[in-house]
Image (cartoon, rainbow, N blue to C red; front, side, top):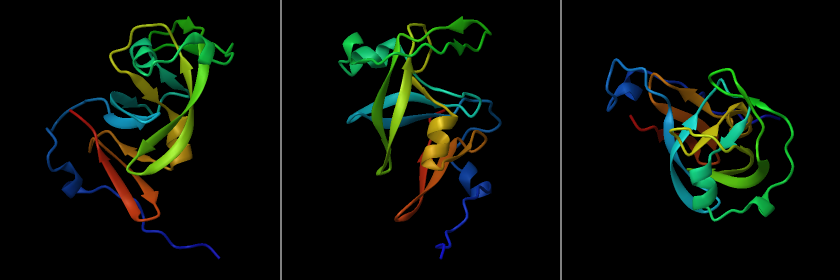
Length: 149
């Protein structure tokens, strides 16, 4: 028997506190490997979770911590980049934690990490760029994480 869950929805109430109109990226704070990390972009268009050099260094990770990753990624500008490697770390939002495999790339990006569809689907996140929020089910009900404009 399935347990009925409250549906995840967005309405005008969710717009309160946002600057409208906007075309901002959905950028949140997340706990990654026990550190609060700002400037984490949630991107429904990305088929990978990506970590950039500033976060890699900030978490005190080393190249020896990486496992092999030979699958190239396609950047926003269409160019391909081969990751330095990959690493799996816990990502926690509002008490819900999942293990995330990040491709570590040595290129500039204005955000510290990118959480793509693999994380979105594992967490069961429903993102809304219009409302600058993500919502997802937890044992306590629906959690709401407001992004930063």
